[in-house]
Image (cartoon, rainbow, N blue to C red; front, side, top):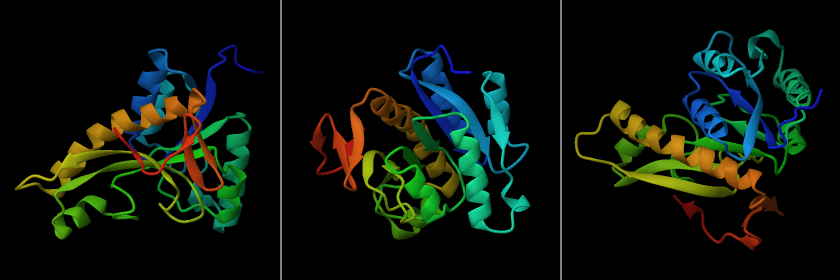
Length: 215
């Protein structure tokens, strides 16, 4: 049964607490241009599922440990996503490396938020590595997902200063505050038809971006 809500349908993938999911829920509830059709987690019992339940959003768990390999997990995940007929898939703290086949299936319609100013600090432990490197600015990026891990074209970024005496947890909290602003903004742009990926490049308001938008 199709929803009477005509806004852009989005499926959100999570693996944990879902604080970025909550930012999306709040934006949608406040009249944002998208609706969350479902939340899917690869881990049972996580806080993000409780957030979705509280908002009346359907949830599914596709536990990666129940599958013998990545291909079979990704096939099940793709099937669960497509059952909700989304026009956008958002990875909001989804901690799984996806196969090329899965990525290609949703090419141009899948976004990820990453806690660094890409291309710096791809992969894990970004805050620790930023402190070790001694950078003056850290932050978060939202990008289209491609087969290259954290390597898809970057749409927008939000920076924060790295301050003397910062610990990994303090810096992570500062970045997370900006993530909660950045991700709903980019999803809203996509929902408004302002954002697309063409030939591996980001287009915004019918112009190819030469650099990520700074928010």
